[in-house]
Length: 192
Image (cartoon, rainbow, N blue to C red; front, side, top):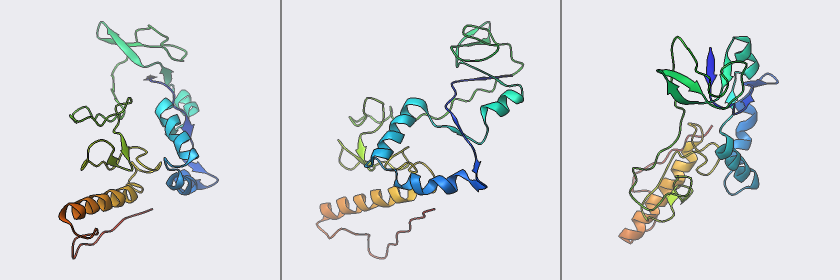
């Protein structure tokens, strides 16, 4: 059995008897794009991807899984391994699996936005979800939008509240009214 793709690192799911997120959540919520730590973590994530949590490479090897480089071609309908480490299935080797499970991973695609808002990475230029170059365009749920937790269920609420406030202020300014939520509206932010 082969696993194609680069190793992005591993973190244990539990550390000293506690779930990893119990230890890291306070740090993750404070690591914003305005802090040195946050900028370093965002740059690292862009360079090498997120570490896998819970299953170490050793466990994969013990189960008979061999990591090979990403599949870069097909030959005779079979996958061809690219550059990567492994006992078998080296660069250019044709793999002969009984079945293929093709997992493409997660990569945002904003190419459908026909506005000048994307940077060299193909990501929106924004400040905390407010588009830098197009007034009235907002984003929520972006990876590392403002903090390390921005794309996680427990962290998106703070960014959504900020964007909602920006939208309300813009609408109030256009209407000539004082900024704030509409009469009778309630805002609720869920935070972990």
